[in-house]
Image (tube, rainbow, N blue to C red; front, side, top):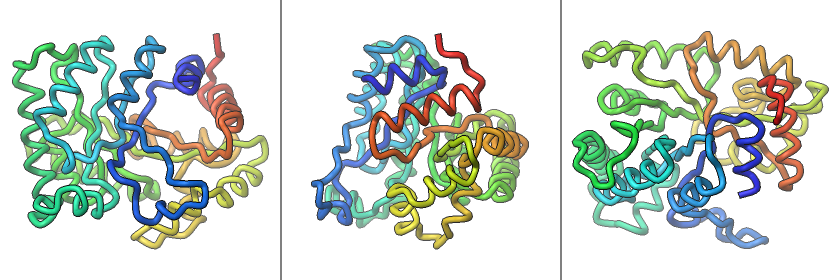
Length: 293
């Protein structure tokens, strides 16, 4: 609650929650015990009670694990109770083992097939308008995660937003152009979808201090150790919002030129809440130019 209120007071647009039903296998033997993965919609309902402006996003819910009818009901309820602040992001899920362990029958059908079926049902339920309570937003904006070509096809058919992971700016530009072509093919406005990549950030007065802090963080070591594309740390640093305020502003401008609308779900590597809040404050004042009230 402290973090949500701080994000709102520092001028951030949204707070985001991610989703794990089960603790991934590689985290179960953690010496400090497994991390707590709070259920996102319950968490955001709690956050909504102590905030008034900040939007509430999921980046992303693992849709193959969820019943689309229940999820539509939960989403409509949360949107109604918060005055229309929900941004509903859904994805395939980072870890196939979650579906295999919780729903082996669905896993045998294939995650992609289950995802596509649930996505079509969820979109239909959100658009029909027969849920009670009704959502304030008609429909609730549906953001779809993933940066492969199949993800782009899903966004073109069903999405109001697209949440890819981090990519080099040249790759972002290429995928945005491809998505807009797919939207046009589907008879939709090529600008109808908000481009909202999920990025990470570290800021310091000296550029090299931010880079060193970012690249030695447990967050980055973890991400690179499980990066199926095998990308290196320097590429990850260059593709996210890392450095001095001037360097980050330059990178944001390049992302905007490539077609990005919203730097979503920014993750700031930090070892304590105090360190995290310091990063948020410096980013807010020096990059966003926000003056806290």
